[in-house]
Length: 178
Image (cartoon, rainbow, N blue to C red; front, side):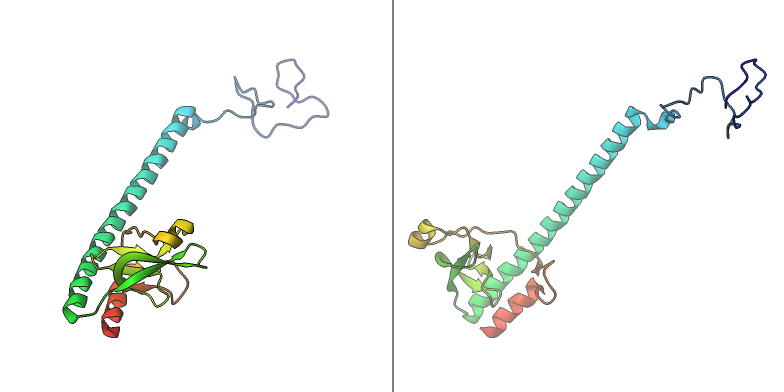
C-alpha cells in the first residue's frame, strides 16, 4: 500500500489498498513472510533424526522377521533330509549354472533339486543352495564351489505369477517324486 507519507494512512491517488494491514516490523519485500518458529534448523534436524530412527527400526524389524523365517525354513530342510534318507531317496551330484545361464558346472555337493529348472537345491547337510555361480575357467576345470544361503519359506517370492511355491510344498513334491 502506498501512503501519502503524512502518517494518516490514507492511500495515495492511483494506488490500491493492501489486502492485509501493515504491522510493525513487517518488512515484506523480496524476502517474503518470515518462516514460523517451528520450521527452524533445529526442527528440521529433529525431523530427519526421527525419520532416520524410524527407517533403522523398520530395517531391523525386517531383518528380525527374515531371520525367523530362515530359522523355520532350516528346520524344514533338516526334516526333509532325514525323511529322504529314511525313504532311501538318493542324493545326486548338484550342478550349478553360470549367472548368464549359458554354462553348467559340476560341484562336489550332493543333494536334491527343489525346482524342475534345477536352480535351487538342498544339500545332504540340510543347507540351502541357489545354484548360480560366477563360472569361468577355474570352475570349468575344478568344478564350482557352492555357498549355502539362508533358506526362505517361499521359493520365488516376489517373482512372476505361478513361479512361487512354499518351501514345504516343494519339499513334499521332491519326496513324492522319489
